[in-house]
Image (cartoon, rainbow, N blue to C red):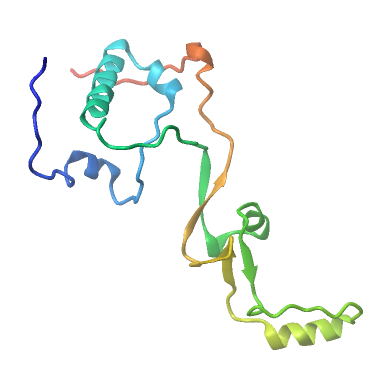
Length: 162
Protein backbone atom coordinates (compact mmCIF):
# COMPACT_ATOMS: atom_id res chain seq x y z
CA UNK A 1 0.00 0.00 0.00
CA UNK A 2 1.45 3.39 -0.97
CA UNK A 3 2.38 5.84 1.76
CA UNK A 4 -0.01 8.77 2.19
CA UNK A 5 1.64 12.14 1.80
CA UNK A 6 -0.02 15.18 3.37
CA UNK A 7 0.49 18.58 1.78
CA UNK A 8 0.74 21.12 4.58
CA UNK A 9 1.52 24.33 2.69
CA UNK A 10 -1.02 25.92 0.37
CA UNK A 11 0.44 26.05 -3.12
CA UNK A 12 -2.48 27.89 -4.70
CA UNK A 13 -0.17 30.36 -6.45
CA UNK A 14 1.96 27.70 -8.15
CA UNK A 15 2.30 26.56 -11.76
CA UNK A 16 -1.39 25.73 -12.26
CA UNK A 17 -2.40 29.20 -11.08
CA UNK A 18 0.17 30.70 -13.45
CA UNK A 19 -1.08 28.52 -16.31
CA UNK A 20 -4.62 29.89 -15.88
CA UNK A 21 -3.09 33.38 -16.10
CA UNK A 22 -5.42 36.27 -15.26
CA UNK A 23 -8.60 34.41 -16.17
CA UNK A 24 -11.30 33.68 -13.62
CA UNK A 25 -11.87 30.18 -14.99
CA UNK A 26 -12.84 27.62 -12.39
CA UNK A 27 -12.40 24.57 -14.64
CA UNK A 28 -10.16 23.37 -17.45
CA UNK A 29 -12.03 21.57 -20.24
CA UNK A 30 -9.92 19.41 -22.53
CA UNK A 31 -11.17 18.01 -25.85
CA UNK A 32 -11.06 14.22 -25.76
CA UNK A 33 -10.37 14.04 -29.50
CA UNK A 34 -7.19 16.07 -29.13
CA UNK A 35 -6.05 14.19 -26.03
CA UNK A 36 -6.56 10.83 -27.77
CA UNK A 37 -4.56 12.14 -30.73
CA UNK A 38 -1.47 12.75 -28.60
CA UNK A 39 1.34 10.15 -28.49
CA UNK A 40 0.82 7.17 -26.18
CA UNK A 41 3.59 8.30 -23.81
CA UNK A 42 1.88 11.67 -23.34
CA UNK A 43 -1.48 9.94 -22.76
CA UNK A 44 0.08 7.70 -20.12
CA UNK A 45 1.50 10.73 -18.24
CA UNK A 46 -1.82 12.55 -18.51
CA UNK A 47 -3.84 9.59 -17.23
CA UNK A 48 -1.39 9.14 -14.34
CA UNK A 49 -1.82 12.81 -13.37
CA UNK A 50 -5.63 12.60 -13.65
CA UNK A 51 -5.68 9.44 -11.52
CA UNK A 52 -3.43 11.10 -8.94
CA UNK A 53 -5.73 14.14 -8.79
CA UNK A 54 -8.81 11.91 -8.45
CA UNK A 55 -7.23 9.86 -5.65
CA UNK A 56 -6.06 12.95 -3.75
CA UNK A 57 -9.56 14.48 -3.63
CA UNK A 58 -11.91 11.53 -3.54
CA UNK A 59 -12.89 12.64 0.00
CA UNK A 60 -14.36 15.90 -1.39
CA UNK A 61 -17.99 15.85 -2.64
CA UNK A 62 -18.09 16.59 -6.38
CA UNK A 63 -20.74 16.88 -9.04
CA UNK A 64 -21.75 13.64 -10.71
CA UNK A 65 -21.56 15.12 -14.23
CA UNK A 66 -21.05 18.45 -15.97
CA UNK A 67 -22.69 19.90 -19.06
CA UNK A 68 -19.95 21.42 -21.22
CA UNK A 69 -20.84 23.41 -24.31
CA UNK A 70 -18.74 25.32 -26.81
CA UNK A 71 -19.43 29.04 -26.66
CA UNK A 72 -18.21 32.49 -27.61
CA UNK A 73 -17.66 35.22 -25.01
CA UNK A 74 -19.32 38.63 -25.36
CA UNK A 75 -19.42 41.86 -23.37
CA UNK A 76 -23.08 42.67 -22.69
CA UNK A 77 -23.01 46.32 -23.82
CA UNK A 78 -21.31 45.35 -27.10
CA UNK A 79 -23.86 42.69 -28.10
CA UNK A 80 -26.28 43.07 -31.00
CA UNK A 81 -30.03 42.84 -30.46
CA UNK A 82 -29.97 39.31 -31.91
CA UNK A 83 -27.15 38.24 -29.55
CA UNK A 84 -28.95 39.75 -26.55
CA UNK A 85 -32.10 37.85 -27.49
CA UNK A 86 -30.15 34.60 -27.93
CA UNK A 87 -28.64 35.08 -24.45
CA UNK A 88 -32.04 35.84 -22.92
CA UNK A 89 -30.96 39.36 -22.01
CA UNK A 90 -33.35 42.30 -22.13
CA UNK A 91 -32.13 45.84 -22.68
CA UNK A 92 -34.40 48.44 -21.07
CA UNK A 93 -33.83 51.84 -22.68
CA UNK A 94 -36.91 53.39 -21.04
CA UNK A 95 -36.29 53.02 -17.29
CA UNK A 96 -39.07 50.47 -16.88
CA UNK A 97 -41.68 52.58 -18.68
CA UNK A 98 -43.75 50.69 -21.27
CA UNK A 99 -45.53 52.29 -24.22
CA UNK A 100 -49.03 50.81 -24.14
CA UNK A 101 -51.12 53.06 -26.37
CA UNK A 102 -52.58 50.78 -29.07
CA UNK A 103 -53.46 53.27 -31.81
CA UNK A 104 -50.81 55.96 -32.17
CA UNK A 105 -48.95 58.03 -34.66
CA UNK A 106 -45.20 57.88 -35.16
CA UNK A 107 -45.04 61.41 -33.78
CA UNK A 108 -46.76 60.37 -30.53
CA UNK A 109 -44.43 57.40 -30.14
CA UNK A 110 -41.35 59.56 -30.81
CA UNK A 111 -42.55 62.06 -28.19
CA UNK A 112 -43.05 59.27 -25.63
CA UNK A 113 -39.64 57.78 -26.45
CA UNK A 114 -37.88 61.16 -26.10
CA UNK A 115 -39.49 61.60 -22.69
CA UNK A 116 -38.54 58.13 -21.33
CA UNK A 117 -35.38 57.05 -23.15
CA UNK A 118 -32.25 56.87 -21.00
CA UNK A 119 -28.63 57.44 -22.08
CA UNK A 120 -27.77 53.79 -21.49
CA UNK A 121 -29.96 50.74 -21.08
CA UNK A 122 -30.32 48.56 -18.03
CA UNK A 123 -29.62 44.92 -18.89
CA UNK A 124 -31.33 42.03 -17.14
CA UNK A 125 -31.63 38.27 -17.45
CA UNK A 126 -33.94 36.09 -15.39
CA UNK A 127 -34.88 39.12 -13.32
CA UNK A 128 -31.27 39.85 -12.38
CA UNK A 129 -29.64 43.11 -13.44
CA UNK A 130 -26.40 42.66 -15.38
CA UNK A 131 -23.41 44.95 -15.42
CA UNK A 132 -22.98 46.29 -18.99
CA UNK A 133 -19.31 45.27 -18.84
CA UNK A 134 -20.13 41.70 -17.77
CA UNK A 135 -19.05 38.88 -20.05
CA UNK A 136 -21.63 36.30 -21.10
CA UNK A 137 -21.42 33.18 -23.21
CA UNK A 138 -23.37 32.38 -26.35
CA UNK A 139 -23.50 28.72 -27.40
CA UNK A 140 -21.79 27.86 -30.68
CA UNK A 141 -20.80 24.73 -32.57
CA UNK A 142 -17.62 23.02 -31.38
CA UNK A 143 -14.77 23.38 -33.91
CA UNK A 144 -13.08 20.22 -32.55
CA UNK A 145 -14.60 17.07 -34.11
CA UNK A 146 -16.31 14.54 -31.86
CA UNK A 147 -14.05 11.69 -30.76
CA UNK A 148 -16.39 9.19 -32.49
CA UNK A 149 -15.70 6.28 -30.12
CA UNK A 150 -11.95 6.76 -30.47
CA UNK A 151 -11.87 6.79 -34.28
CA UNK A 152 -11.20 10.49 -34.83
CA UNK A 153 -7.52 11.35 -35.07
CA UNK A 154 -6.07 14.82 -35.56
CA UNK A 155 -2.37 15.00 -36.32
CA UNK A 156 -0.67 16.95 -33.49
CA UNK A 157 2.22 19.29 -34.22
CA UNK A 158 4.86 18.28 -31.71
CA UNK A 159 8.29 19.88 -31.53
CA UNK A 160 10.99 17.32 -30.85
CA UNK A 161 13.64 18.55 -28.39
CA UNK A 162 17.14 18.63 -29.86
